[in-house]
Length: 166
Image 1 (cartoon, rainbow, N blue to C red):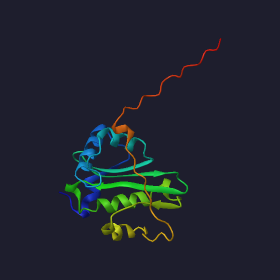
Image 2: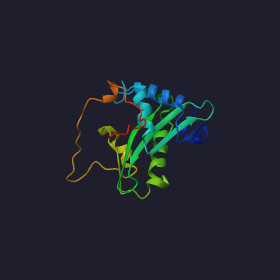
Image 3: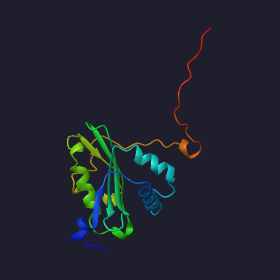
Image 4: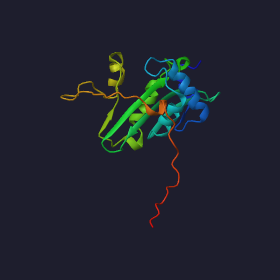
């Protein structure tokens, strides 16, 4: 297993996931309280529709070792989601490497607010990059709804019918 000193040679950065990486990401999600139960089809769609993907793969095996994704308008807001490191690769500095990559990414350098949400015990970790839990008069809000993709299949867009008039 690599040490933190040689982690940069032990992994390689990728910004697109293969179908095998999607499966590995889904497996990683199943081991976490916050993502357990996600369906692989939904994971595939979430990654596909993310604006920026950050991942590290084992240089020897190609196996997914760490992942994060960002949704952004590239001007005002960017939100970091799903920061996750495979258990076998934890304590090597990959979480730190992910955050460095995200906060220094050229496409995100001029975004006014980069945001994320995390458990209280992770606040000190994220504060190293300037994140703060002190949002002044702002409160985090959420509306939870049933995911339609879990119960129905979305139809692929096809040609539209033109109406005929007599």
